[in-house]
Amino acid sequence: MSPAFPKPEGGASLVLSFRLHRCTTLILGSGSLAASRAFAALEADSAVTIITKGGVRAACEEVQWRAQCNQLEVLDWNSLPHSSSEDEESGLERYLAMTTDSKISFVCITDTLLGLGSDRRSRASAERIYAICRARNIPVNTTDMPDLCDFSFTATHRFEDPVSGAKTALQIGVTTNGQGCRLGTRVKRDIVSLLPKEVGAAVDKVGTMRRLARPNALGEDDESCGAEDSGVATPNRPVPARNSIETEAENASRRMKWVAQVSEYWPLSRLAAMSEQDMREVLAGEHSTSPAALSALPHPSSIHGLDIRRKGRILLVGSGPGHPSLLTLATHTALTQLADLVLSDKLVPAAVLALIPPTVQVRIAKKFPGNAEGAQTEMMEAAVDAAQRGLTVVRLKQGDPVVYGRAGEEVLYFRTHGFEPVVVPGVSSALAGPTFAGIPVTQRGVAETLAVCTGVGRKGKDVQLPGYERPRTLVVLMGVARLPQVIAVLIDPAAGECGRRAGAVYPPHVPIAIVERASMPDQRVLVSTLRDVVTALESAGEQRPPGIMVIGWAVLALWGAGDVEVLEDGAEADDEDRVASWLGGQAGWRVIEGLPDGWDAF
Image: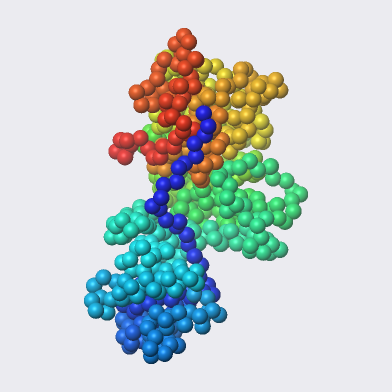
């Protein structure tokens, strides 16, 4: 069964964004629509020229004002270089021939707008103008004539900084590809209303941090330090452990990867609030544990106002897979009533952090690729420092703290420093992730046992993976970034001989699911086979960490009408047909977006 890549379906647009510095946008017409097009072009740093009958005096009020402010130029058709016997289209052709020095990037024909009556440009005229521009490779947008459009305008919103009121770099645009412009505007409004007000400021702060990440010796366009936007589908690509001997380019590349990590995991409100000092600490892989930062935390005191220190405490708390409704009551109490300081792992989503009262300080672990060990130590040190000051410290981890959450080493560390932490269990993503994907990790007739393992060992070392057993479901945590290596260990017979797999080789047609951001609104589930999953993931676009792998026949057990006869005698003979039926003929994979129906009620 060969992999089937997504089939392109026409009718979409190639949505691009343009920076128009040193370019000119030419607009025909001078009404309110022309003013709107001019404003959009000016915000993109384009020069704007408007051509209209009667010149600036015939233009709408906004166009006149912008012309008076020297923001744009308005020309009268009669002023173009043409003889009295020539029509407008010929005059435009001569004008374009004479303006090669000021590159015209786009032409917008707005005087074809329905409702202009006798002043509306005829279709025949618009067709001639369109042909003239196309002959010069100038893209054209013609109002109300979609077949004379090389591009269209999206319903656009540019975000402001809620504090300063200044425009930010963040824009969104929605297009319905001509199927409902008014509806597109409504969809844009709905999207804007769902995003936090700080989102534009967060983008600007990340932009500042990107500039700080680039060393002075490297140019802004130096590809060697552009790792954040290098086209790699996941920011979790394995990175060597940080060392003290790095070239300037290597150091810049590492910092750009850390910028990607912060962009992926930190709450938008936290990004928007970053100071330059915060940014420099991120890029240095450090935490703010200065005396000034610690003194800003509250001091427990007696009712008489004396600073009587009590011994603090440390709670190791599991936040579950991500959805706030899956927090245990104990975790909710710890976050909302007990905590003086929360030290959170980067994977804990913003929706959970939002439950913490604003009076409680929250720090997010900077466990970036290549820096995990140092960041882990810094977080433990910060917890002890605060507990020694009499504070209640909540060490917040995703899932369950003892399921690959490094809780054990933290327990031992805190114990040697005089604190016996309280471990508060959480719902493990090893169980919740498959459930949200419609996969039962155990199922009569399909999966009788469950194994949970990690895809990466301590300090990035390889781990030994379990061998194939037909009745077993294998859940692999923290392995998606190393998917090709993990799959090779499972299906390569030689991997068992060298000790990287403990047991039988996996048949290549065994089902696998990759569950990304389980329980969150942007959850994505990719199902395939071990044979095709690497290609499937590469073709699925940007990855959405964190992700887990579920491997075994339980993956297909509840799909459609279900298949619970996998363990029947002789069932193995039908495996290829079983998989083909599950994936739908020759398709090599399937992608399911979003949460299961009904979860919007929570």
